[in-house]
Amino acid sequence: MAVALITGASQGIGACIAERLAKDGFDVAINHFPSDSDKANAEKVAEACRSYGVKAELFAANVADYAQCEAMVKAVKEQLGSIDALVNNAGITKDGLLLRMSEEQYDAVIAVNQKSVFNMIKLVGAVMLRQKHGSIVSLASVAGLYGNPGQMNYSASKAAIVGMTKTAAKELGSRGITVNAVAPGFIKTAMTDALSDDVKNAMMKQVAMGRYGTPEEIASVVSFLCSSDASYVTGQTIEISGGLMM
Ligand code: NAP
Image 1 (cartoon, rainbow, N blue to C red):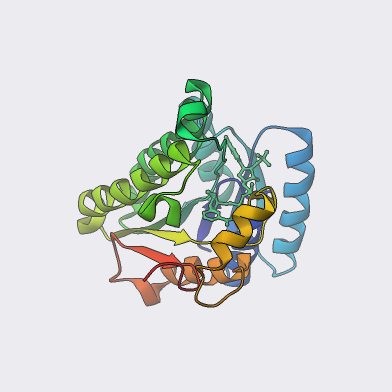
Image 2: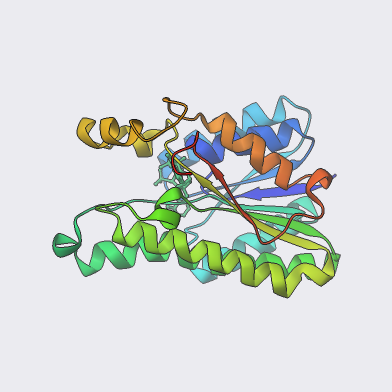
């Protein structure tokens, strides 16, 4: 059975991707931040995944921490046997206008959103190189493609993912490993619920489809990129934004 590892999968888009990949037939490794509440949420996600008849196991790790990622990847291999798909989904925001943004706000977002992708692609890439196959999908954002006021840290981290995706695709492609990213626009989750009404209204005016996206609409594209249907797609960042920018 193929195995998918999804980071930050205790809620939101990551939870939805885990369920979708379970529905597709993957055994799923559900990463969650090491806290009791994340673990409890992740256990609910695992239950939902198991209803599709696949294995679903929890793996606690702060993905910004290389040593914790290393231990997690080893544990996934030991418990589930392989890692055939990796979804780098974990992410945070710590918004603030540039002149008010602290160094801590900047560094924290870069560590979780960007360094985690280095940690996970390096570690899981080594596993996939030995297997001679695999698919890697990372969650970028329209903020990384076009910028967004108040998100210097977040847009830097997400723009980096676009470049990291291309680099990893070039390094790993000859061994049958595809590396892609998706760039969601406004998706209805806790992350966007936290935005002010002014920001939400201003952004919604720019969305051609005039509505939020759903986590399921992100999961379906990730599912495609993890499937053999996408076997010749690599190095790409697919925007899923209802036509936010064209
Ligand atoms: P969310 O609901 O806040 O979920 C993010 C998940 O990542 C949470 O479970 C969170 O755990 C986990 N996480 C955060 N830091 C972590 C760490 N250091 N180690 C392990 N897990 C960690 O956000 P979402 O909206 O589903 O976003 C998922 C991804 O899509 C993110 O990369 C985000 O940047 C990207 N994205 C979202 C949107 C959108 O509109 N929602 C748009 C573009 C891109 P905690 O709850 O403990 O923090």
